[in-house]
Length: 379
Image 1 (cartoon, rainbow, N blue to C red):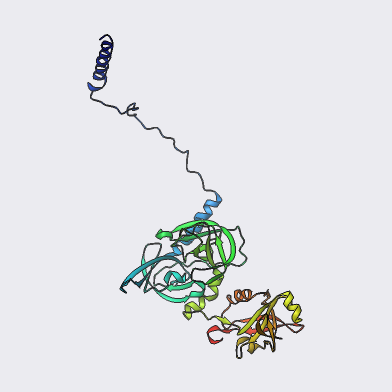
Image 2: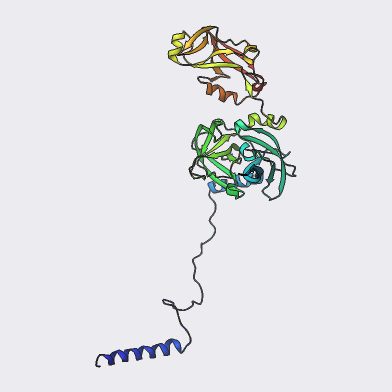
């Protein structure tokens, strides 16, 4: 009983305290609340900081080019399990290259499309016509009819240096007008998912994601140096390794794409094997590297220019070859050691171009001018 009295007294005192301080005033405050302040005190910056030179250049590059970058929507159909038609829609990017409304993009952006629609930066939409395609270089040109178009400035992708700054503008995941920045990480040949090879592809860590395909890769001055085309990623989004087609590859075929709708592939009309020092010594060749012409296709470009194939039968391992032909060591002053070297040089030419081929015929070094034929016309 003695213990109960102090407890009851404490309860009564607590109740009276609650009545007079809280209940009677009609206010119940949350724990830790000390009441509403008369004014919220915040810390404001002294003023907007001026932009540094790098930020200003980012803005300049973006403003210079954003009006020329477009969103491309392609609509195609496929078949479901029951062979019913199922519509499909894909998105990519592109950029305007002239005032006639030609837009450069990737082939895979518009492949198999039944309808192509281009949306400009001002959100106006136009039906586009596919003008030309080049599957082997993953390039395509579409055209729209629109007023006051702003073509982009096409730069030069030769002599790009690892480490130089680049910008990518496009529509990743459908988010129009996005700018990302990075550097040239490497220049290398890469294989696309369809098996085609991009020679001298520009590798960059500028963020490239689905929807960027076909958009421009720009240099520090805002000139186009590449066409963003693919990423290396296990999760389908940017992992810091993206690739762009060199703009010089596109410039070499643009005229054919616009005027013919296809590319006139150049052909020399030869079969070759690469020469290594050991093989050159065995054959008694004057050059220890290059391409030995095994056959000059009769009527082909090389044959017409007087290049000679092999005339003597021999074996390379178990493979029969013809030896005694000319050895190609350079084209237009560029050294040629492998068939890939020759292919990369040819990618910068079209049928009808004349090139200067440096050869060894026996011990004699000489230059021969060759007018390239068209691949579809030759073996």
